[in-house]
Image 1 (cartoon, helix red, strand yellow):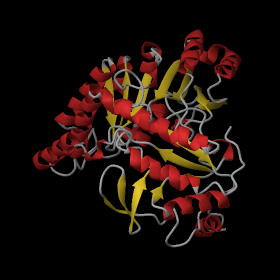
Image 2 (cartoon, one colour):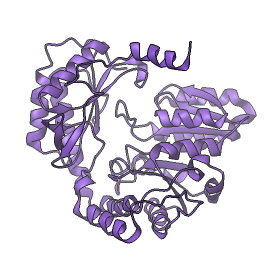
Image 3 (spheres, one colour):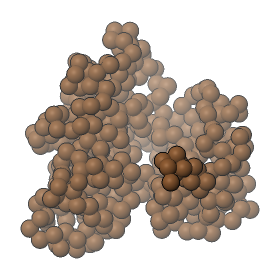
Image 4 (cartoon, helix red, strand yellow):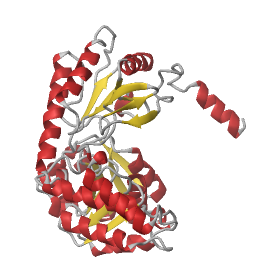
Length: 399
């Protein structure tokens, strides 16, 4: 079989055929009216699938900072961080992030994906071990595979299972990296970070926490789950992204370990890709200040998340295990999931259809992302649209 034949074979099993007017693969946002509403395939649509948790994509301070940086430094760096692509603004953002997290070291990457790819593949290698929560994001899985280290999965959020597997390592525990998340991207549940930290300390392993979905969402000043659980001092590396609460694109890692600086000349995903644009860096710096100084945005986000979660729960939908800005609705079979998505889309509601193998336990999900910018009337419209799905079968349960 040729390589192209392999692609054809894959296409035959593609789960999302749909029709030209209502398919997630064909949905195109043509215009945005606000952070939560746009024109999709010619229809005015409420956006309930973006990760724009604080609604900062249309914030005036962020836009003005971005415009000013573009006028001063152009549209792009056209170089990597080690080849003419390190600007003063990159260093300034790294300083901002280190101060925000109360540590001494921070590195900015070009995307959240390359952050995990670059950090994990540089921290561990052949002969080392990774202990990985089974629900971790694809970028983490890819970083683990790139590293060449031994990969051991432990049951989701199960500190006892992690402890058991760490015990089996014997004297290899000190060369082990444990990787978990703040808020898990598919089901929206928090990581069991306090108990996992106890296991980490027991075996003197390193711990990396991906706060991509919890930055700006959890914690007194928005630093994430580790701040909320008061365990930041026990976490070795925190990674995150600019593409959610910070409303841009890029990624970062912070740490109290000075060895983080070695990543700059060891990480191939850091070295061999262009650095973030001046506009992105400027808007991210503005957004970070807003996160720290405007707790009311987090309060509004959680009020909105609670409204949507409780509304879906009252209708009898099988949803995520806890209230979160990420709310997953179990949708049964792939065919039923597509039918549910299409019915919502035709009513002007855009959620994310997520199918195996991207989902935990091979579930088909309608994944909603709530924003602080959603209005109560918008969420009422979303709930009304979901109420029209109750006639469809969706018996498969979330694990």
